[in-house]
Length: 406
Ligand SMILES: N[C@@H](CCC(=O)N[C@@H](CS)C(=O)NCC(=O)O)C(=O)O
Image 1 (cartoon, rainbow, N blue to C red):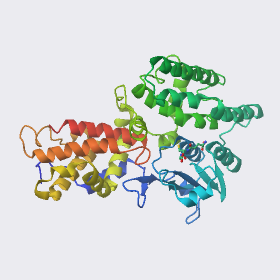
Image 2: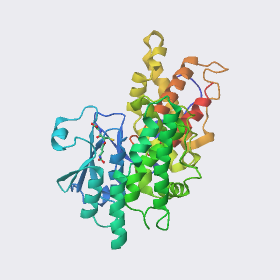
Image 3: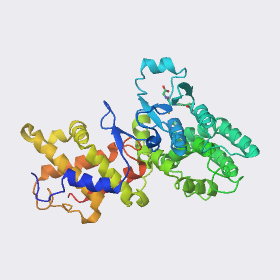
Image 4: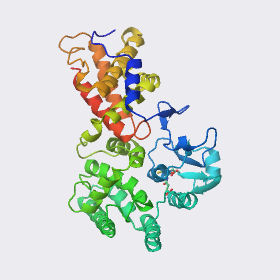
């Protein structure tokens, strides 16, 4: 249509993408374009058998408490099923079932457990191997105490207060910061008590209790409060702990990426960033398995993605004489370019100004492409739509293709 600069077909792109990633997802009926990851341990279950755990979690995978439970299930390789609960419209059967009405909740071999900490401990009691609590009795007692402390030591309240509490008084903000830093100092000391980067002598439930919250603050505070945890010399143990978590495959399956966390604060909590958005981490955006995962997601989910873009991004305003087909074609073309760039990098025949740019081949197609790329860049959400690494690669590629349009 709009241009002689052809991109590969979806079939070609998907075939290459699928060869380069093992990540696969299932569609979520009624929740398009969202998909759900397949638990890494599901293959261990005999064909047709029901998984021993059913996890109830939030539809958008934003909830840090659900992330704790998911992290443990992946670390322990327990096969599980997921039921997504829309927190803005909780079904009555759920509020009848769970006394707190909150997520997460789980059925462990049919028995209901709620509160993330209690679910973690119940999973340990039922699935003892691999254990996320130390064997040695003394250290085991410390571990159990520290799991409790993670709920009661005030770190979480101090962190979210500094991040979210609306105040225009700089002294008040400085106080929130000081309180939070004092709590981080305590955590720093706790992390120094046992050898190695984790809280105890090996990875444990204590790490899982803290990681979803610390990850969110590490992403949000630089952008919303101009404050850094990562790279801050005051917290060497916390920084070594972040690095150690990055070695764990389960962590990469369950975590969000920084942009998801930052956009969420803007959209869900109405906060305005006061710092620059952080650069995308090249460690992920250049890794072929993440690029391929992002291309696979885009290719496999393209029909719903295109429908979503046409309906919600504003591109329809560019339709001349109601010609929606032309708009849809241009959306499709630019998404193929994006998938192509994810797979082939700089070998991709990017337009470099020729679509609607200086040669002025088709300015409407270029405008639709620009909207499409900007929209999908911020629309995707990890780990709801793809892993955090893939989301980072996806956004970096969208930026690159966008930069080639004019
Ligand atoms: N103490 C609970 C906290 C769970 C929680 O706050 N969940 C939030 C989502 S992040 C929720 O269900 N919110 C829905 C609501 O408040 O109605 C736990 O550890 O499980």
